Length: 255
Image 1 (tube, rainbow, N blue to C red):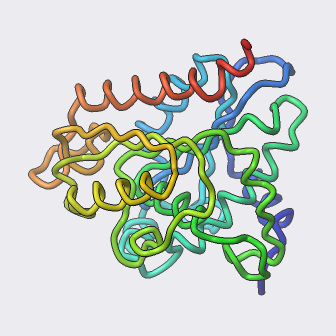
Image 2: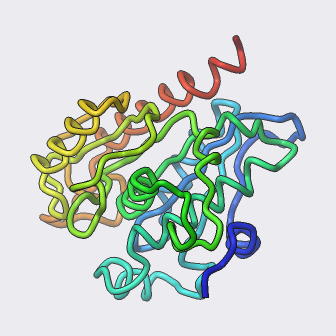
Image 3: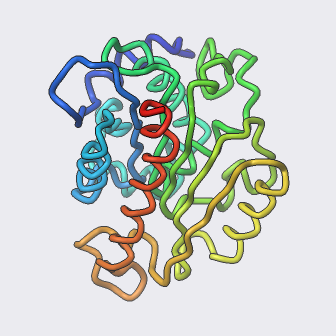
């Protein structure tokens, strides 16, 4: 049975952590979506760095809301057996709806941020008209919500089958910054470049940062040949994030 956007947010809200100034002043916000294995320490590192720019950051736990932990994430979500990007795109839309209504958030100054599977979910959302029941696996998707998004930031997003952006265009032209790992084993670097170049040609304001690193280069526990922690790459990724936040969220408020 399909949930309404409000019903999905009602569940997600209880599984969402907030970082930012301890006041009630309306501020821009960033919604952060973790990778397939769930929330890891590096997610909080990014969230806290983003909050230091003066915005509010909301870390949405798409596993906890379903009663899952890291084991289910690795065995079900990372393998593609459950919660693929198209389905999780409903979490993105519902969180956008819920957070934009908060009195301490400027509702039309919001950024979406996603890591790996979180990026896949955001990208799948961009390919949908959001005008028909069932899109994003919601009963009442609303394309008007996308107008509130002023930027998209993604780190090593998954762009392989069955991600919709491999073949489908984005229906919304939103400034996007993406950090690509040149040694990504889940999505070949060449494939990622081709997808983002195509989106750029279609009119999406696109900036890519390519790093000589592996998938999940910002997870300190990764010390293998396939996924390996790279402190310098993480630094560059975080700097790209904060610069983008300043550009699309902070500067408009100052102006």
